[in-house]
Amino acid sequence: MKKTIISAIILMVLVSCNQKTEKVNNSSNLEKTETMEKLAKQEIESLLMTYKGTLNTSNADKATSLYTKDGIFMPTGAPSAIGTEQIKGAYEFVFSQIQLNIEFFIEEITIENTFAYAVTSSKGSTLIHATGETVPEENRELFVFEKENGTWKIARYMFNKTK
Image (cartoon, rainbow, N blue to C red):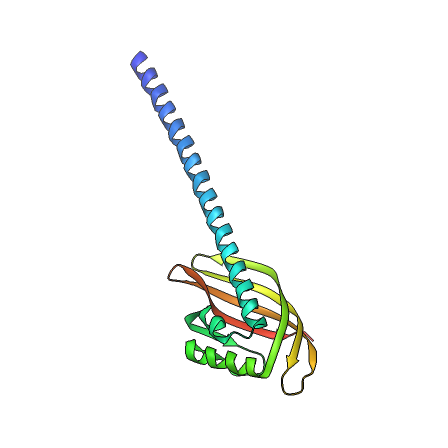
C-alpha cells in the first residue's frame, strides 16, 4: 500500500513539474514572438521612412530597390507598374513631372509571418515642374510588404488622394 501511495505522489509531482515546464516554454515562445513582431514593425517603419526619403529626393533607383522583384506600384489615375523595370519607369516619369515634399504618418502595421501591411497617410506639397506651381498634397496609402531574402520589401503599394 505504501508503494502505491508513494508511486502516486511521485507521479503527481512529475505531472506537476511537466505542466510548469510547458507554461515556462509557452511563455518563452510568446516573448520570442512578441520580440520578433516588434523588430519586424521597426524594420517596416524604417522602410517607410526610407521610402518617404526617396519620394522627397525624387530618387527612382532607390524607390525601385525597396520593392520585391515582382512588386506592383498602383498610383492614382495611372496604370499599375508591375516588376522592377516598370516600377522604375513609373517613378522616373512621376519624378520628371513633380517634386514632392511630404511627411508620412503610420496609422497601422500588421504582421503575419512573411507578409505585412501598413495603412499610412501623407501630407505636404507638390511642385509641378511644368508650371512651377506648388500645390497641397494629401494621400492615404496601403502598403503590402513581403520578406524577400530576409529583408522586408514593398510587394504592393496603392494610394489615392484624400482631397
